[in-house]
Length: 367
Image 1 (cartoon, rainbow, N blue to C red):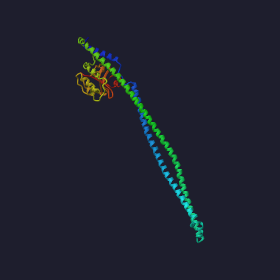
Image 2: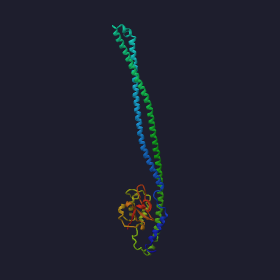
Image 3: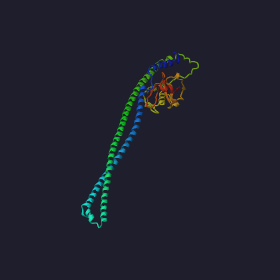
Image 4: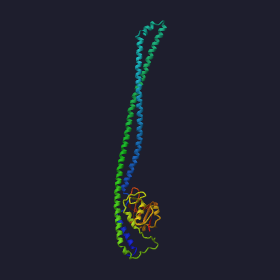
């Protein structure tokens, strides 16, 4: 075998084996659909909460009306008692005056006539007694009218009280109905969130199994390549097409193997240790294990090594995305290992899947 051919054969074998492993996809449609449904339910809860707020205020207004009517009823009862008391007093007063006028000797009609000195006095005294009797009758009439009005008002208030109580009951029922709907939506949301967590856990488990298969293939292929390393030194250097970009071969594929050994490790902001990594922290740690010191910043890593065309990527190359805001380590077969974001874990993804396809910036080779 010619010199330089072994790495190419090794890379070709690795690509073939990697392609035989199922692709690492973006979140499954079922997870996306469940998240969309959960978002819809959350929106419904927001609308129901707003409706419940309005219903609470309507119930408050109904209770305010009820308290007002009940206060009027209380006042009306007080007025009715006054009217009844006045009526009794009026009747008692009239009764006393009638007794005085018609049963006692000093004020009887006969005394009125006999005690007068002249006909004029008789007429005046008779007229006075008539006026007194008429005034008493008028007072009684007014008291009766007042009592009648109070009694009528009491009937109106009783009817209003019944109506307002019914309104309060309706408003309270509306409030309970909305609260029940909100409780049902919260229960549905909890169920959806549980299902989403289950689906994500299943997806992450699949990805972990796939990543472990990738890593096993990677290590197995490296072992076979190491066994044939002696033969590769006997061959000649492969020719480079005229005009093609020549990039020094990667000598740090072991960093990819280190990173792959931490598949499933949670993302931790600013993390750069086995307990948790962010994207540049994973790269820095993996390279430190093969004796290379790198900065803990995806932007600073862009200044490391040399640029690599996408069609010449080798295991260990650094791949960048999102305007240099994200970095991973290429492992071959169009795939790379990385720590994506908060809430995720170290995983393997495809350069050509989802957002990574259109947010790819470029690659650097550490030399």
